[in-house]
Length: 217
Image (cartoon, rainbow, N blue to C red; front, top):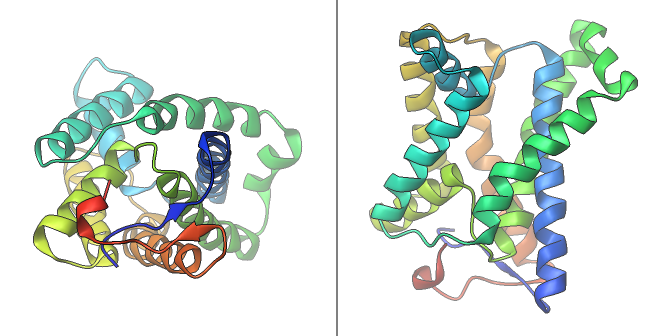
């Protein structure tokens, strides 16, 4: 599946899908963070850039996102309000989630629990991606690049996302970013998780199946 399904309904319904998807995305990131088993590939890249420039980790994330978005736009991806929401709301939600003591304490859990957090985080990010991309209001920078690359090359979304994630991780590692088992799991797991989310939405009553590749974000 190269094209995401679209959530049915008026703007208010699709806006709700967007916010819900971004919230799930934030939850998944926090789960990975609290697992302590490795940063996601793009965070490894941002950390590596931060280590070699005056930029903070957060600013390096923003710069990376803008660069990725520019490439996606040049390849033909459509940019919408969901792209801006992705950049702003996820960060705010992460700050709120990590301020909750019960969530912050998850980092002290046993290895088995943290392994579950790692796998759950990747799965939740995939599901969240389906909801906010399916809102049809513009995907985030990395998802836009994933979708437009898959469409142009005729490659499955899962394979495309895995290639992008591995490339980011290797570049970040070369720059000194921290890589762990969670990084590897994310690189190989996020593509299939997003692909599964698209499939589930396409076969649900809340979304229309993707019409054809010309409607990709």
